Image (cartoon, rainbow, N blue to C red; front, side):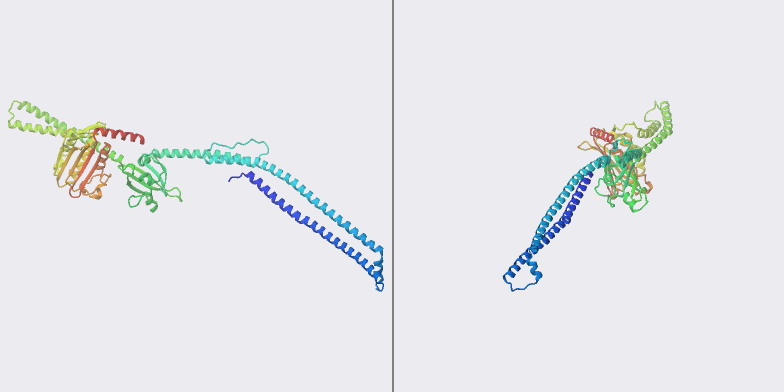
Length: 571
C-alpha cells in the first residue's frame, strides 16, 4: 500500500504528539493531583483527630466534674481540679474546636482552587494542542509544497524514463532568490537525462552500425554466450536458420528444446568451453534447409573474463559447389573450344580434300568400286570425327535459361556418345532404354548433362574391372519422370550412403581415381534446383542404382513459382 511522504510525516508527528500528551497529562495528574489529594486527606484527618480529642477532652472534663460533685470524698490534684472547674478553659477548647473546623473548611476550599487550577492548566494544554496541530498541518503543507511536490515530479519522470521515454524533463520554475537543494537536484536530474539520451542515442547508432556491418558479411555470423543465447546475428544467419529471433542456438539451428547431444552433434560452444582458446571447424546441416551443408568456423570471443562467448562464421557450401560447377563448365567449355579450333579445322580440310577426290575421280565410277568404297568409308568416319567436337561444344553451350524444355533422351544419348570411349576403355557396357523418344523436363540443358556425366563417371569408377551400366528413362502413373542408373560396381557401404552427397566426401575405395568429392553434391544441387530429387540404393559388392525423379512440366512450373516466391520473401 502506497502512503505519501507527506502523510507519513504528518501522521508520525501527530502520533508522537498524542503519545507525549497522554504521557504528560497522565504523569501530571498522577504526580501533582495525587500529591494535593494526599495532602488534603492528611490535613483533614489530622484536624479531625484533633477535633475528636477536643470533644473527648470536653466530655471527659464534664464527667470528672460530675464525679467530683457527686463524690466529694474523692481527692484530686488542685491543677486538675482547677482545669476541670475552669469555665474559661472549657470555652477555650470550644474556640479551638471552632478554629479547627474553620481550618478544615479552608483546606477544602484551597483544594478546590488547586484542582480548578489543574483543570485550567489542562484547558490551556488543550488549546496549545490545537494550535500545535494546526502548526503541524501548516508544516505538512510547507513540506508538501517544498519537498514532496518536487520529489513527486522526479518520481513520475523517473517512472516514464524507466519505460524508455527519454524525452520527458522536469518542469522547474526559474527562481532568482531562495533556490534550495531540490532545485539543484531538479536541474541535475534534467542534465542527467540529457546526457543519458545522448549516450543511448550514440549506443543505438553504434549498434545499428555494428548490425549493418555484420549484415553486409555474406557468411552467416552469430555470437553465442555460455548459456546458448544468441547475442547478435546477421541476416545471412537468419536466412540459413530461419527468420525466428530471440531463440537459443540449438532452437534456431536444430529446432531442439535442449542443448545438442554430443553423441549426435559436434557442438562448437561445448568444445571451446571444454578446450580453452581453441578454434573449432565443423560441417552441419540446419533443420530449416537440410539439403544445404554449412561450414562453421567457431572461435572464442575474448571480451569479458566473467562471461564466455564464441563467434561463429557459417558458410553455405552450396555456393562453393555452384562455383566449382561453374569452373568445371568453364574449363570444359574452354577445352571443347580449343579442341574444336585445333581439330575441327584440320578435319574440315581433310573432308574438303576427300569430297574433291570423290567428285573428281570417283563420281562416275560404280558404287561397288573398291577404292570408292574405301574412300567413302573414310569420308563417313571423318564426318563422325567432326561430330565429336560438335558434341563437346553442344555440351558446354548454355542458353542462359534455367526454365527451358529439355529432351531427356537426346541429352542422355549425347552424354553416352561423349563418354563412349572411356566406357569401352574401362570394359563397361552401357545400355539405354526408354519408353518414349519425347520425354521433356524443365531446367538447364548444360546442367542436366553435367548431372548425367557425374553419375556415369562415378559408375565407371565403381566398375574398374568392367561391368554393365543400365540407364532407363520412364514415367510412372503420376507422370513423374524417372531416370535410373544401375551399375554392377563395388557398391556403397551402408554407413556411407547418407554421406555420399556431402561435399568433399569420398569413400576411398579407389584411391587412384579419387576425385574432389563434389560430383554427387553438384548433381544433387542441380536436380533439386530443377524441382526434382535424387535417391540411391546400393548393396556392397553388387552395385548401386541412382534414380533421378522429376515432376511433370506443369507441376514443375508450380514448384518453380513457389520456390521463386519463397526466395523473394526470404530476401
